[in-house]
Length: 84
Image (cartoon, rainbow, N blue to C red):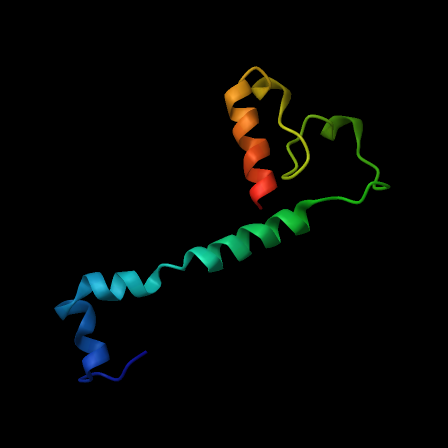
């Protein structure tokens, strides 16, 4: 926290847009974060999955069965996976 009376302390009042823009992460930071989630959410091929968990969406694996009819969504999903 900036000390009271400094320029940084008063900046949220004098220039709120600039302060807000400092809180937003860059595209690269966002891509790294999403990629990390993708990597950590994948499971090894020898991992056992319960029969109750078969329809669960695991990021990077398969789409839920009730979304299968949305071919455009599936096509875009595959395109996004390739880009990542």
